Length: 132
Image 1 (cartoon, rainbow, N blue to C red):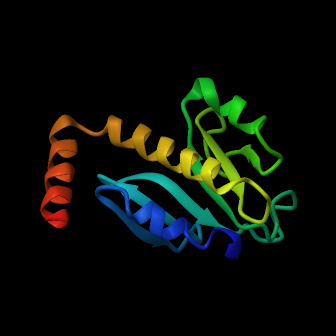
Image 2: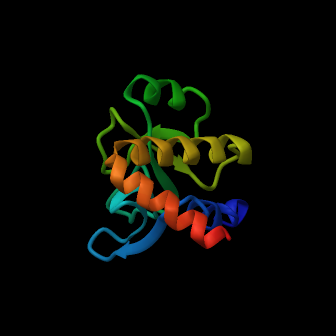
């Protein structure tokens, strides 16, 4: 993931973002309001098509997930995710940084907007306190 060494910092810079490691999946997850908006993993040899390729898994609007896959060969249907709403981006490819940042931001926003208004307000209030 050296090419995208900025990725973890970027994901954690989003308001209310936290990370944890899901041992049984071997995924580094990124959450907002307790909901996952991104995950980084490296599938093992039992997953032939993806074996050994580190990827970030991101949520997409259902109407755009297919289009996102047409942008680059590095964007594929979500690994171990609902393929209608999630895509995976291989981190060993040549996807431009700004495109990956946009994908990450879109995923965060989708999940954030699904939170209750109260949860959204609390996250933004905490962010304001942290910033001042």
